[in-house]
Image 1 (cartoon, rainbow, N blue to C red):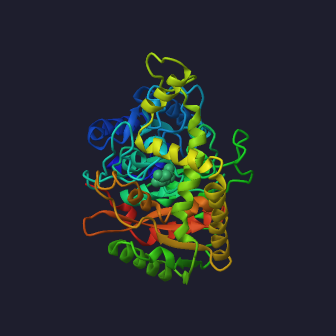
Image 2 (tube, rainbow, N blue to C red; image 1 turned 90 degrees about the horizontal axis):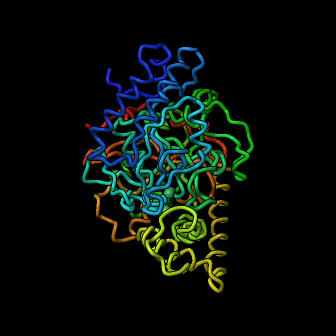
Image 3 (spheres, protein in one colour; image 1 turned 90 degrees about the vertical axis):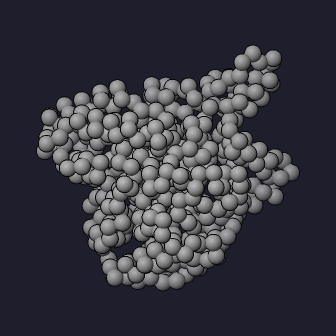
Length: 484
Ligand code: GLN
């Protein structure tokens, strides 16, 4: 059996039957990483020693019959989750040598369930980007075509899953960073409802938008991981105190005929023909599965990108003020005085995109511009959320393309920020409204590059999203294709 092709569920069964040990499985993926990572650059840090130690503990737990479905499962973690004692860089020179003294809630929960963390994946610097090209550690290459980006910002996690370097990965999504790279690498990615998963120990980009989620081959695997990650956390005051369903049970439970809304604004100019065709075909599949699809409108959609690029940089400029060279992170050599230390440490530590966002953010928050930009953006954000709320009085789910085009070439857009920002035109609205969004594979274009479709649900209705996605994956095989 080719272990690089199996699902998390299948691996968990093999481990429980003891036909495979967690150490064997971990070694298998460490070897694959050693071979593929020099080309793909998906991992910033590989923790061979830590992974093997965790695998040995998992084997003991399996032997005692105390395993969870994640015990012994090798995962990759985006390099912005603080991992105690393991370098966490956020793909920035600023944190190049940062070793967190504490553990994020997401990684703590996964480790407590027995998961094995293989290493930390590459990403856009501080999660700012849509192509993984802003990483201080260099771009990630898309395993479907190594001249192309895997999308971003969770591009390392996406490439690692797509290339079979781990069984699943964890990413974060502020404006699309789980869903867009999932679409561009042919995998499944879920951004949960804002507050469903704790942000404690996730290095902050835009705190009112950031959310962690699973990146997997199948919906069933995403359900398993989300169950382990989600839930209230006293360490994150924005985490929601509501019970976590067993999402695996929800995959098949009460699948009543769904009403799916198709928002016209997501099929307008700028959408590539191949993506449009594949998504329209997916709509037909959902209809064959018994869903009723109805056209509707989300009129505020065109304001999402400008609204996001006021709010997200505003929050980022505030969050990134802590990197001052004093307590942790990069500090310049021989500062003349305090001001010089601040200025040079930050100039040297941050890359161009991060600086652009800090400047944008401080500008829109400055007195005199606050009302014109920041306050206005907050009002538009409310209107965008209201659009969705109105839609959900008519339908259970919305179906859209995840991204307007398939994976683009490395270097194609990195000199044109506005073009790059448009990559998230279909995902950003969902973050502004705090809703759950799921991307799953629905076809390939003429260059054999994967295409993703997005399902958007009501707050805390991840179960409905996953059930619909699961039904689609039972009827199609797009999620089973692998890059050669
Ligand atoms: N591409 C968007 C940005 O650059 C979203 C990134 C994200 O979701 N982290 O801000």
